[in-house]
Image 1 (cartoon, helix red, strand yellow):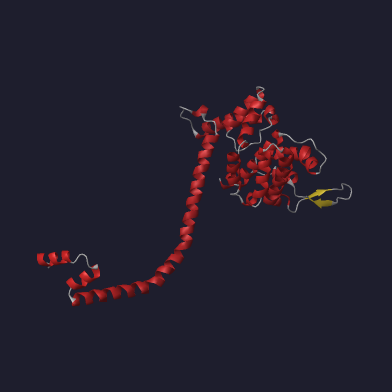
Image 2 (tube, rainbow, N blue to C red):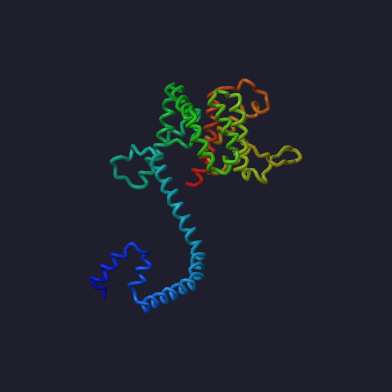
Length: 305
């Protein structure tokens, strides 16, 4: 047991290296015993190291699987949140409804999409908008407030900051990331009001991304070129032919595919082949940026959800 004298001597020696103090106040036999214990512990640790390493290697797939599951859970949670925000729950407030009644209310809130007038609404293909948002824009458009609706979308891409946010999102998708320098140049041209530059470049990038991402839609598919002899040729992959094939499946908003086909027929080919020279307008440039954003959402956000 350490007495008061020993404690006093210890305090006086506090300026010394603690290891020296430690050695002076412990007996040589005890120090020797401690050294032996340290040696045994070290040898035990060394012997266990390969086992621990093997355990870590064996657990790696499990840890990775757990991480993937957690990421999926987060994405699903985000999807549920987006779904809740996307549906107009006004008819459901303060009501105790069954699942079938809730489903009926949701379908009721979507009925406006089946109206003939909605098919003519020039922004009916924007799937990233919530139902209340698209319904609100549609009602404004019906009321003759087309300019208010256009102004809203014009303002989405009217500053360097907003363009940078959009580019940052595009950079997260493999089909967009390799084209960022080209897309960035087109978006900068749009900001400067140089629509003669932004429109053709945005068209080529939209077309290219659509083909790269969805070319399998027309793989091994043919069209008849001669009714008499039955001759056929392979379908050439472009935004129009791919959109037509995707329209037969689920996964893309049908209005979006109809927009792509319609714009391809009316504008894209004439502009890119130099047959149309009076195409410079802000509205078409904005719609192409919106089309790229909708395509990005289809390939990234909706897909992950």
